[in-house]
Amino acid sequence: MEDEAFNFDLTKEQTEIVNYEMEEGEVLKINAFAGTGKTFTCRAYCKKRPNSSFLLLTFNKEAARDNRIKFEALKNVECTTVDSKVYKHLCEKFKIGNGMFSTADIYPYLANQPFEKNCMTQFVFDMCVTTLKTFCNSADVDIGDEHLPVCLRSTFQRADAGLSYQVYKCSRLLWEILLTKSKVQKDDVVISQEKSLVFSLPCSSTEKDGENDTPKENAAAAPVAVPLSITYEMARKLFQSNAIKLEGVDYIIVDEAQDMNPVMLEILKEQSHCKRIVVGDRHQSIYSFMQSVNAMEAFPHAKQFSLSQSFRYGCNIARILNKMLHLLKSETKIIQGVSEDKGKVLHFNQEISCTPRHLFVNQESAFAPPPCYLFRHNISVFSKTLQLSKQHSDMCIYVLGGKEKWVSLANQVEDTYNLLKLNSRKFWKRYHDLERNAEGGRQPSKEEIAFSTFAIMKYVEKHIKTLGASLQYLKQFGKDNILENPSGAHFFVGTVHQSKGKEYDFVVLGEDFSLKTPKSLKNNKERVKQLEEYNIMYVALSRAKSVVCLPINMGAFLSEVQEDKDNSSKEKGKLQCSIINFIKRKRNDDEELLEENDVKETVTVQS
Image (cartoon, rainbow, N blue to C red):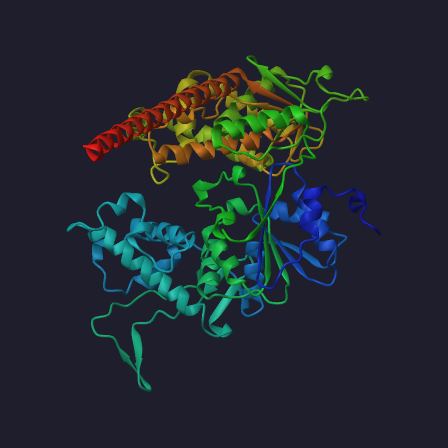
């Protein structure tokens, strides 16, 4: 059956992309603003080339599942995740087994190594796993001290770097074992049914010398090694380290390329035998905490197209997006709204608990879509869910990410509450140390504590007298009123990160976004960090189809940035005028000097 989606006319931008013929090994970049039909464009491109095979890669299962539905009519397109492709390739070569990676797995492989006795502790093993994860998410070819946990990096070059150096040595040894085993025959390696590689390594106190086995000198008896499994990150790194190529595909399309893992980027670069299309939006790069990189910048000389015609929101929402991108990120490309009369931008200084019927244009039915509340931090999701549950106890809420996500967040708040309630001196000291660091201008690092957890602690401390009863109330409310899926929900609540790739008729932004003007940023580190905060604001705004409600502080923020930019332009204009006037005066002085010299020369000649 003909796919009805292809009955729509292509825009001029889409037509240029679909008609472009790539050469072997070429890279094509598509810069697509939010809601501008990048998926539709890719489908049209694939449909026009039925005799070519396409591999559409995404970074999570949900996006891959959605793409399978959208591309179902095209038999020449495989939609999957990067991890699935990596494991599928490895499973074709190796056996199937069981096992999950844990710090306990590594003990048998390190117990008989010539390390200091006091260093072989659970802490060292934990640090080794952290080091390996950091390394496996980087594009580096070898483990260095920069991959050590932050708490160990500062001591690595010092004379007392015993612990740091032991973790470094252990991590390198483990990686060498993994890398060696990834290159051997299939009988030596098994792969978990749960998609974790498992390495069965004999860990004996003997080694072969010719044909006979001779004991190692001074070697302690080591525990028998159980199969050592590795994580998704390690599997990708092994895939990259072995420079494996994906055969049997003509085109590779990478979606959301602005948030690519460095290892995934290196894997993509290795596929030079394919035609590669990277699709993304640099303004939607919001995963730097996962060490993501913008793959669009990795191919500076590639042919580039843009998609700027929105199919999601109207001109009013497009205007606020254009204003924000121009003021905060100096974007010159203009997003075109789908129509002049579609979409509204409202400013509210009070909470919105329901969707007013009159906010929706051309709404013939009595049904008004549920509002979607988007926040920067998880604790704001918890707070809003609690508020809505008390205001509308007979209504249902869907927390973005599903009920499992909500249960995890509620448990985290409850655990923090219980710890604070116990008045553990050690816990309180740790919390207030972090608070002082934050007040002193230094945000706690990820290794110390995640910022979301820090925010949860501040929230719990503020509401500690009433939070116990609130948690009990939420447990009862959540049994039936917090839903597993969005169908039937009266309210959506979630973070911007959880809303990525989705759209909602009615979006309400919270007041917990980072609103620092470019003028207030002191150094490049702050500017880089704040750029991602601007991206998060852009993603949140661009989720709206019909109405987006901004908090008053965000409207005031944009006005302040506009004023700073206007003042800067005036100062720049004054400076330019001063420079021009200086040049004119200098030119006049030079001309007068030349005339005076000419007169003197004339007088001299006549004399």
